[in-house]
Image (cartoon, rainbow, N blue to C red):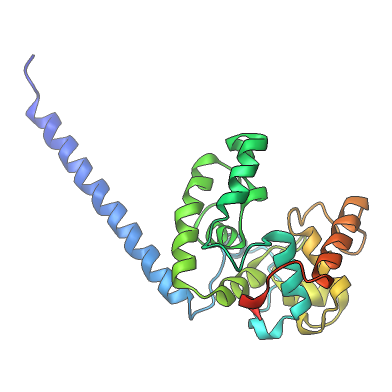
Length: 232
């Protein structure tokens, strides 16, 4: 059977353009990772709301402007091994996969670094492809950024309720009428407890599940069960 030279030429050209596109995306990603170590980024979710002219309530503050109580509560609730792993908590991921299968390795195994990678560079929603991409992105972020910078970005871009509420400062102002720097531990624990589902979980009217979650987080912080040395 004769081979069509034009078909091979077209396939070769497509492969070359594909390789160039991948290289371009990698260069853009590398540039953004370096820039975001020093420049405050905008998450894809916030950017999407801005493009649609929807409300965004966010005020960026440095990590020093966020109470240690909130830092401790969020790390304890979302990623207790944050100061120990290198972007991916392989032990937690194995446990979730063993319990629920590959499809279960979503938020239960998502580190703070993986969530930052998703919020800055990937699309909303859940898919195996996106989850697979989070892992190498998180490893790169952890290698380039200090832990304090990772947590600072997370606390400033995390969604904390309906109607475009993002970041610790906006959440503290909205729910407690005070700056994030002044949050007490019981307030911080409530904010941390709603992070897994900020549209359904309510800070001011917590259901039984949220209230119990907040009490557990508060107790663990008081007991010093989470290593927080990397974010102080």
